[in-house]
Amino acid sequence: MSGVGTGGETGTGIGTGIGTGTTGTSSRHTLYDLPVSPAGARCRLVLYKKRIPETEVVIVSPQTIGGLKSSEYLALNPQGKMPLLVMRDEEGEEEEEEEDSPILLRGALPESDTICRYLCERYAGGGGEGGWGPSFLTGDATSNLVSRLVDTYVFPIQGCLYKAHPPFGPYGTRSDAIEEVRRQMRVIDDVVKREREREKKNEGDGGGGGGGGPYLLGEEVSLGDAALFATCVFVKTFLPKFGVPEDEALPDAIGEWFEGVRDGDADFARVYDEMMGAIGQWETNGRWDSIHLAGLRDNDPPTIFDKIISGDIPASIVHSDDDVLAFRDINPAAPAHVLVIPKNRAGLSGLRKSSPEHVEILGKLLLVAGIVARDTELGFGDGGARVVINDGKDAGQEVPHLHLHVLGGREMTWPPG
Image 1 (tube, rainbow, N blue to C red):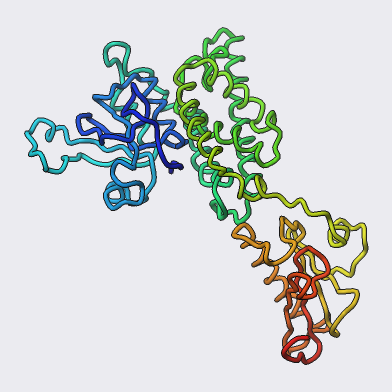
Image 2 (image 1 turned 135 degrees about the vertical axis):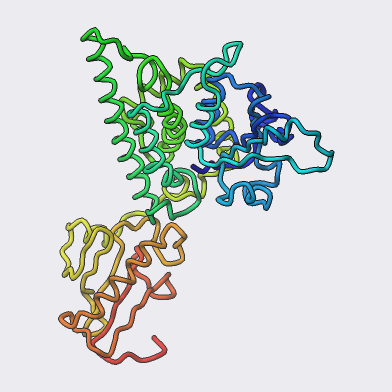
């Protein structure tokens, strides 16, 4: 999964934070990551809880080799994403390298889940002085299901909570993507609830089990915990910026688990602080000030079109779907004259208010205009139609809610009046 953000904290590894200095050539592995990265956060949780030292894995910023889009980074990961684990060739470590010779690499491993599983396998068992545990239950079905749900259905669209504009995965509008993030979190919440109920039943039956431990599977942390935690940091912090009450940002079972591990586990708290420190910089830089539905909201008063959409004012409706309404103009300027409007104005009081947030609805408006113009029962003929958008007072716009005039049934003249 891909991480986000720029910049990092001073320091170069497990003991001192996520670095921006050396590339960690004295370590067996180098993890390229940034504090705000939710994908990298799960890898850092594995490193911290297993007590893997800097001599084994050092964390550095991608900026140390020019950033995610640099030729050097893209040679390691053509996707230009983070985190990325670079593994040194163990035979190369034993050879004397010339001062200017390239580092001998065994390979570069992208994708957070793959990195975590490699670390769990590579650093299994005891590493001395309390290191290299726990196992993270890599074979547990429930843990793997939670990770898979996060990676498949939440990660690809959670950019709707912080990125400048769509698309967000398959969603062309921020509102649809936000709703899907919330729906998928409820799906995961059902999994968490079922697991907690199973643990309680096992404990009541004397079968051992989790017995109400702090983690998703009870007393032992899992990869599911690592995967879900970082996403929860984003969801809980960002959803309230879009009008969701803070106490509703996370579903009940997930919310209880999240607060438990954040407040009761030092390693989870450490990752939380790393992420929130970087998010605080986003806040300082005004990241959400220009984001639709967060800093930018439609605060203009409702219009007569809103009453038509709600049904409070009757209209001769010729087309209606989830997003677009079309109805006959009560003062027609041609034998066939239909208005096409978005049901959700979303700041589109006029065409000049459009932004990349509106690409999908603008396309849908034109699509419906074409459907209407082909409808001979509405008075449109084979000769075509004229589609007009009046934008502003000088253009003759009377209602501050974007609308398309579709006119036909007679020959038009040019230029318009």
